[in-house]
Length: 213
Ligand SMILES: [Zn+2]
Image (tube, rainbow, N blue to C red; front, top):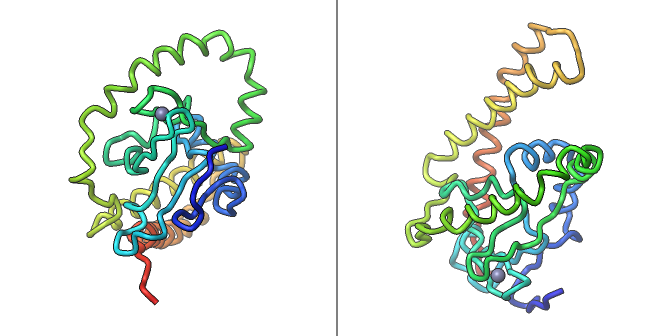
């Protein structure tokens, strides 16, 4: 494993509670399997750049070429936060930066092993060939916090809407519970508030600066 200066960086690896939660939460499996969301095994946050928001102080190291990538390379702004089924593509060396795997994803992956095994190499080659183009026109100088200004409202509401639909339509289909109007009505304000809280939390979290004490 690479060594990092722990005086300069806060290091997020599997030992961090947020990362552990990522591995344990079964809901993450949906994002990983269908959307191709990936979180690198190691990420760093610079503790010395006190005037910069969190999102501009986050880095992803490539263990193959040791490049310290700006974490914003893989963001919703460039649609590079998804479709990373084989890991995070390193634009410097063309290798794949190792990522975490959610426990449920891991389980499903091995249970369905006989199905995808035969397609994997072909799929991976195609995926890899498509990567350089995705990162071609990224200009981080014009990057805007996806939750900044009033964007958190839109992001929060769409998250709330997605959860509302998922919990009321898709989830009952999976566990075969009968449709219940009362439950649906109650869940409207619940997901509205939860969505707005999520949006606001993300805005505050990603924009977080270190206050000089
Ligand atoms: Zn690399």
